[in-house]
Length: 173
Image 1 (cartoon, rainbow, N blue to C red):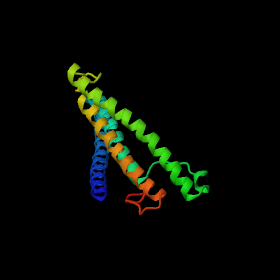
Image 2 (tube, helix red, strand yellow):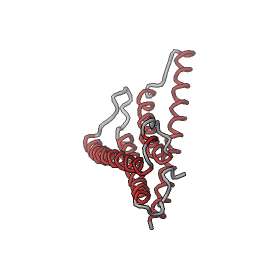
Image 3 (spheres, rainbow, N blue to C red):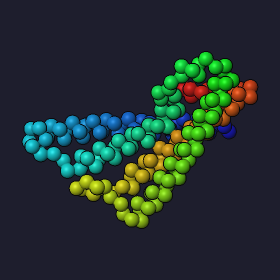
Image 4 (tube, rainbow, N blue to C red):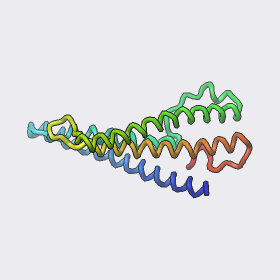
């Protein structure tokens, strides 16, 4: 049961990470085309600022769970590596619990913001006025994915701490 849950989470978060990668590529293309248009024709897209802001939020929140899943985030471990494996596991559990608490809060607030954006009809501040809901949904999905990844990691670290066979290694790939 837990193995199946892990596979679903890993697959889903990997898909989200790939979507985030496409958002980065889209952002680069839009900014490049806009720069060329501005330089050669003295004219640019009106919506570049809005879309580039949306894409930045998109790839940030969609990639955050993927980055945590792969443990590709920046770490400063010059002190932690000197501790015993058990102490490292305890510190990892404490760290992931704090991250989970914050992620739950952000996920909850992004859900509230989705509802508010739908009710109010919130739009971007740029000249085009693109609806804000897609950004809010992206934040919610990305943070929800991070919450699930953190739960999987907490189960893994907890099982290692108590001497059980790890459900999935800390580096899940």
